[in-house]
Length: 109
Image (cartoon, rainbow, N blue to C red):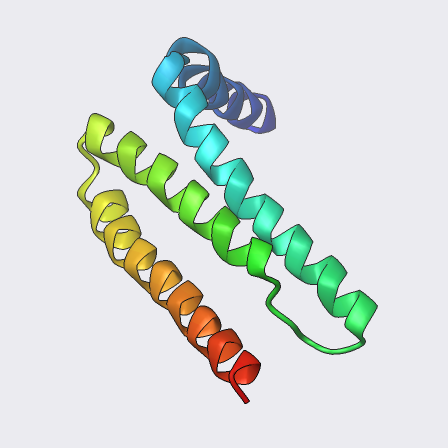
């Protein structure tokens, strides 16, 4: 039973990551890596500040990762990815707009 399970898992992983590997898989993985990078940037910034912070780079990585993952989802015709990323990108851009508005208000004081 354990041997069969390991063979099934191995076959699944081979099918998903090797057999179906193409340019678009690399694009999708690239988008996910940008998302991972944003959390690493946020973690380092928070550790340095000694409190939870969202650095500007977090939002740029979010937009980059979101756009790439959206393109991947459109190409693969994945409605869950398309809906999730399309909405998220607007939220990330809005956060950058709010940050810009706050900086402008502070510089005008």
